[in-house]
Image (cartoon, rainbow, N blue to C red; front, side):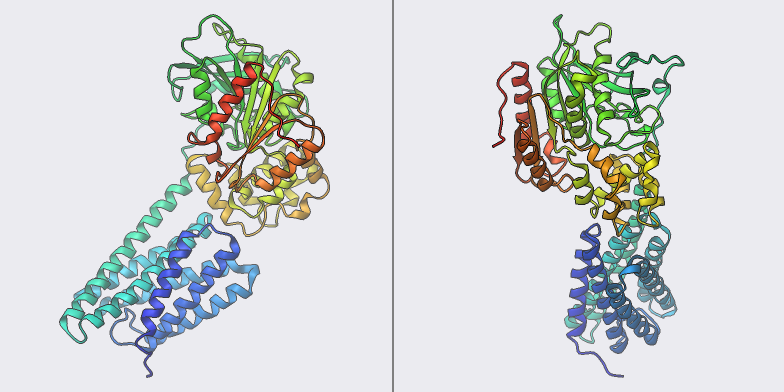
Amino acid sequence: MHRTPGWVRPVLGAALAVLGSVLALHSAASIEVFVVLVSAGLVALGVARIAGALGRDGDGEGTWPWLEGGSGALLVVAGIAALLWRGTTLPVLAACVAVLLLVTGATSLAALFRKTPVHRAAALLGGMAAVLAGLLVMFWPRLTLWAFGVVFGGWLVFAGLHMLVGFLARRRGPGGRAGGRWREFGRVAGSAVALLMAVAMVALTAFIHAGDPRLVPDAFYTPPTDVPSEPGRLLRAEVLGSGVPANAEAWRILYTTTNPDGSPAVASGSVVVPRDRGEAPLPVVSMAHGTKGIVPRCAPSLSPQPFEDGPAAALRELVSQGWAGVMTDYVGLGTAGPHPYLVGEAEGRNVLDAHRAARRLEGIALRGDAVIWGHSQGGHGALFSAAIARDYAPEIGVLGVAALAPASNLEDLALGVKDDAAGKVVSSYIAASWEELFPALGVGSLLTPGYAGAVERIGELCFGGRDALSAIVGGTQLFDAVLPASALHGPLGAKLRENSVAMDIGYPLFVGQGLADQLVKPGMQRNWVAARCAAGQEMEYREYQGLDHMPLVQDDSPLIRDLVAWANDRLQGREPVDTCP
């Protein structure tokens, strides 16, 4: 039998280790990059197995060179097919990896019949690792793409390092006992590490798959039998004991508001005020929170940290200066749904009615005017709050509105994020919410075929904690957009445009945008700002270099300082800045 040249195996080993590392670290990358990496890994591993079968010199773990060589040839074919046969990439890749790992495990376990105890230990550990990893890929379909990338990448690294260790051991002691001992130690140690990695992957996958503990809204969120039709009525309030800023007091509230169709509704929310507040009415910041999910258990007031949404540091600073904060949960979060996700007028009503209800809390005096702000979905809600305030709640004086990375143009947002994992979560939330809110749109029939189940699963997850990780991992499984571009034509596209911000905001307006934002794209925001400025809107628009969607509002962001200063300027009645040309 022809033997492969000595340099082939270390070169292949190094290539496998590098490919595996890149793949494991980019398991949530774009589908195109992912497919190329996996295909290259399949081909490289197949060539390595063929080289191992041809160069059998006692270093391999298998007992049948023809099986190793044949499986290597199949891997090369599968890798090439994965690149060419795009339509069934995920099933082909998953099946190839699962079969590869199971066959590798079986051939390793067959080496238990070898005479050397070290060989048996290495075969047992390595075989168990391969079988466990193969079963992981095969039986965790909800996390298949993510687990598949990490498991296969890790296996490529293990296979590459195993080849390198074997080569170095032979170089250190050719034909001698020292080389043999190094080779045996490397074989056992590598197999043990592979087994530990496989067990860790199973545990981590189960942890993520479980998501967060399933909170259930308690009786506080159940409306009374006789609900007033007047919006903004306080139905009940209860002291909040956790997640309250220092030297402050807080309550969760239940109040009346209005559904998208104009019918009466009930929403929940929260209020925070300084503990030492004197007798004078407190200035108010009314907050619209960002995306949290679309089911009742995702309500911020149910969270152990109810005031940590968006620019939380700015809220804490204002409360320490004597301000009150009022935040709605929106209809359908906490209370019964459906939640009007990114339905602008409904969000705006929820925000304004929360302010109305908070002013009815006993023992607290709040001013009748307010600064309104929000991040992401909340930026969208804040803009609509200001746009409808004069007609819907004329008694509330709006001092100004701050929209931070707002979802300002829903059609552009849907097109811009349709291929990103987080964007697919947002698209799933829109699809699941609007299917219930606007049945005439037939959103379910517009989904990419076969995606209805994934949209339903993602819709049950909140966008926070382990749930958010599980939701994003679920998004990585979807090769195509949840709502294809063609679905945005016709009634759905019209509804997206209807809920985009294309109206004049007749109050001081501040818009902040991170230039590294991967969800609300900077280009989309700049186009929206340019269009609104051209329409005569005055605003202060600020961009923040290097900040992504969430870092824009984190405690160390320069936005926090700007936002606090802007809010105090509005309270003092100072002239707003206009950056429009």
